[in-house]
Length: 286
Length: 298
Image (cartoon, rainbow over all chains, first blue to last red; front, side, top):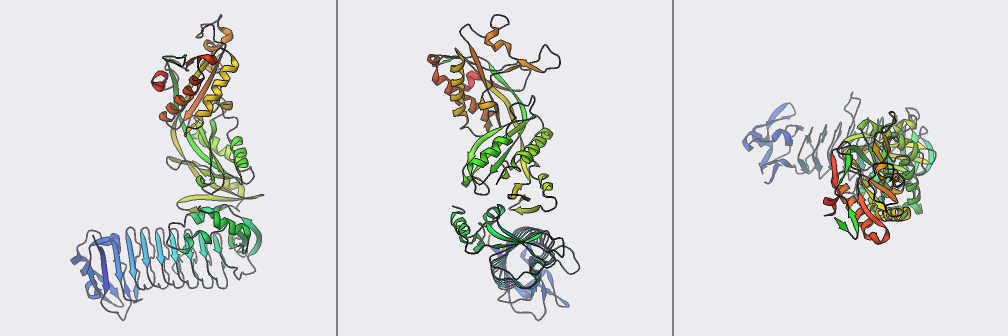
């Protein structure tokens, strides 16, 4: 069976709510029924076949071809099974509340990607907007599980109110990364902005580069942490820089904070130019 | 049945159902992983008074351990699930948490999950950190040498305890030599432990006693010094009897361990003073698992 493919016919002036087009909702539906689904487009409703050419039949493997058109919001909302791929860009709320399965965007995505995500693997090959994996405004808990992998850069407030799960960022992160984080792990290979871990309660921010830390994060010294090899081993199946043994390490400088909050969170920074880290990278996964 | 001059009795060893789990201890080097494992499995020869039976299953190469450090796998057996959980937690807390550079992981994923480090985390006094990695929950407990890493739970499975065989020899040194040879081979079998000191027990017991308070007492039928004063099971030339007790995750594991153990004893043969192999048979009163010696060696 070939993947159920939606190819955008044209660009709409208003944003489109794509939440009805997820694997579990399209299961056992005929192409005619799928074509007749109405999507919210600004103030009006628009039929799926008005917006997309539809081909293929496997509703557990959905491809959305949007020709670099970033007004498609809520793609993969509450995805509970199967795989969805976006060839192009995605709008806001990409993978919001995702429960299981795999979601992939070839291009960049907008605000609130992976917000309140519960489980599964969400991959963004481009950049992500602000509030990646965050809580919706007014809600108290952001991402609660699963893995988010971003190959590009992310905006501000990544992991805001994050509760559990792993966020892997190959590029740079904006200001307030990990702000108000309740728990979980954020790893950033690139640089981080100002106010890292602002009001962070628990959780780990793992960094390859020395950040600009606020005065409420205290230096706890250099350490060898036994959980890091296990964490890195769990990344080996990903198509990512994080899977490469050359990036792994187990020697870090630990900063505890945010002392203006509970102070049980940590920022772990790779110790640069340490022989032990170099030897560890060479030996790991061998 | 006679193998290399050693008579194999037409009898069976009786074993009983137990609950078991496996834990993996790692450390900075093999020496300290072994020290921790030895402490954890100490005073765990028999459920009669130790609360559990535990032993070192095998040494683990760094490539086999979750954190890539040298390790040791230990098996712990108890009569019930609650007892097993209590023993595991107590031993992990006092013997592994306390041991320098150690980390503790689950050795069995399936089965009912019982606490491994789940409650030890409270030693962290609020500074402990949970990490859920690849579906497994770990606890990082700050300790004076750095951080104690432990998996939250390990799997509990149904197992078999009390598989055994008796080595009857013409002298005490010959019985011991034969048992040592057996243990060397049996230690190569996975999923089993021989919980007694060095794997060998010289004080095999029978069920019951003339003293009402005691549930077990010396197996007088196999005591060579009582040959003339009790209903003995020994012929005149037998001067020493030693027993090897085996606990295993399955009956098949015990079968295999008994086979290689008896084979090693028989290789020494009658010329080295080994006369008979027998087993602790309690007339079906002890347990539902029966290990027929001649079937195992057939």
